[in-house]
Length: 139
Image (cartoon, rainbow, N blue to C red):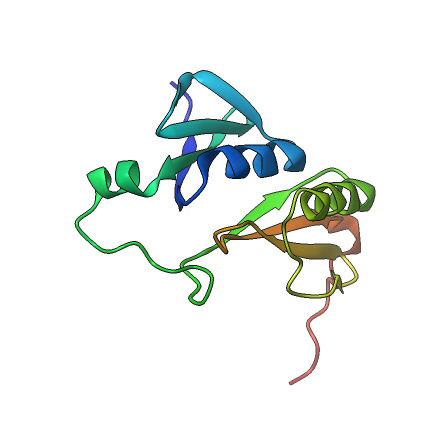
């Protein structure tokens, strides 16, 4: 079996969050979804599990972080072009997300940030390794 990544997120409104992640380009896998959680597929090996707070608490004995005011993690997704970065962010904003930072252009990488309704932070980026600096600046 191939290695896979499952990111589990506690969400307050499962229906609203499912619509938001669908707008970003995720698809729902109904085989692993029910009224307490939705399996959202980014790629063949990357999945985001949107879980109601009640369901999420079945997996931990720690309190759920308030990610609207605290950062619990930064999740990054690479895409094929700057246009795709912009399209995903535009769709996420239309679906109710917020963009807490301006676009960042590092020369070889363009990155934009979007937060969902619960404050989970996603970095959407395109990287062109042919533009990666080969020389390190003098210190």
